[in-house]
Amino acid sequence: MVTRPFRGRRSRQAIYDQLAEGVEELRTRFGGLPSPVEAEDIWGDIWHQEAHNSTAIEGNTLVLREVELLLSEGRAVGNKQLAEYLEVRGYADAAQWVYKHGLEPGEWTTGELITMTELRYVHRLAIAKVWEVAPHSDATEQEGPGSFRRHGNKPFGAGMQPPVWTEVPALMNDWVKHACALPSADEPLPEAVAEMHAEFERIHPFLDGNGRVGRLVTNLLLIRLGYPPAIIRKGERARYLQNLRRADAGDSGPLGEFLARAVTDTLMRFIVPAVAGPARLVPLAALADHRLSVRALRTAAERGRLRAQRDERGRWRSSGLWVEEYRASRYRRRR
Image (cartoon, rainbow, N blue to C red; front, top):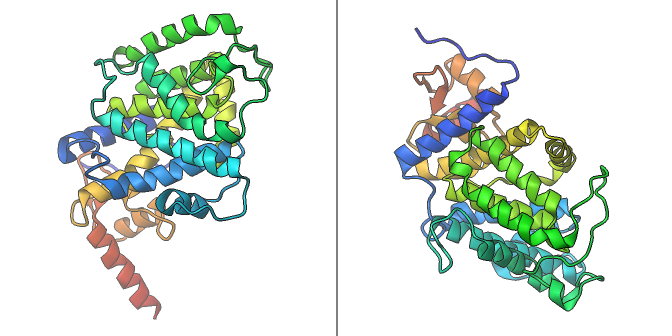
């Protein structure tokens, strides 16, 4: 007997399960994450969204269309400060490196999930361009892109004090060692990744760019674990920072759930619809958009207006072709 799925707010474990099942299906049905070379359009959309949102969280004012034109055509439109364009360009260069080397071996690949050399190189890529025109005002010659800070940091907004700079190299060696142990973590993977992200931000190893680089290296870890990158949207900045503070206080669950939702969104919004094609049955979340929400599709399926099938867990699946057929029937009814 097929039971109807529960409708209320999903539990954290249900969100983790949905992500794990989605990634497993991506691996078994579609061969895992497509390479950026083979699927340039998929990764291009992710690239624009990540570069825009991650830099906007730090105060960059370029809108998405300006980011798209900058990255796709090299056009700086919008009459913004030069540093803002260079900040986005640098972040985008680092994100491209993360996508490529997350999936394909590189010259620094050792078989580990991440190395210190890779971490510092991501920082260099992300920061070097904007550093040329707007270096940190307190930076010494030893604190440029790719180098750890040699200054103390002011306390964070919630009062937490980053460690003194002399402790940073040892702390980051420990961070890399713990990151490499993620595949054997006892807790749910989203929470283990959340702990690593929060710990990176607590250490604040660089003089500048820690938020951007923290999100980039988190995505490098995710991709090497077989998961899509997390796009943390600028509209969710307050909740993201609140969850980081809760992780600082020892509760990584909210940040883990937050990251799991972000990764699932990338999976269902960008990757599954593209790799599945228009005819394969996929979860409704992979077919929803701004015109038809998941709830609207589910209602249409339950009323028999959208061709769909329940899987062995009772969840609705449909195809791109069937959704387009349903859109056309809605249009005809309205005429």
